[in-house]
Image 1 (cartoon, rainbow, N blue to C red):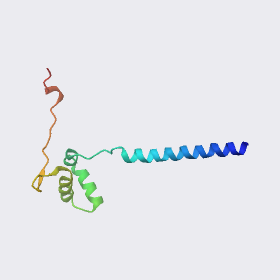
Image 2: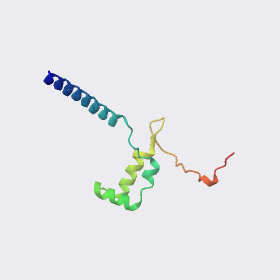
Image 3: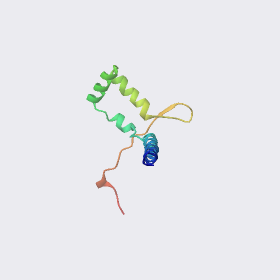
Length: 98
C-alpha cells in the first residue's frame, strides 16, 4: 500500500514539473524583449561604433549605415524606403500644463 502511494505522489510531482516547465518555456517565448529604437541606433558613440565594427569586421561607417537602414528606415507606400522622423522630447520644465 505504501509503495502505491509513493508512486502516485511521484507521478503527480512529475506531472506538475512538466506543467511548470511548459509554462516557463511559454512565458519566455511570449514576453517581449527590449527592442532597439532608431534613436538608440543613431545615438551610439564613436567608441561603441568602433568596438562593434571591429567585432563584426566591418568599417564603422558601414555599420552606422546598416543600423540606420535597419532601425530608422520605414517602408513607404510606393515600395521605396523613407527615413523615420527624428523625435525630440520636450524638456519637462518647458511643458505647458493647464
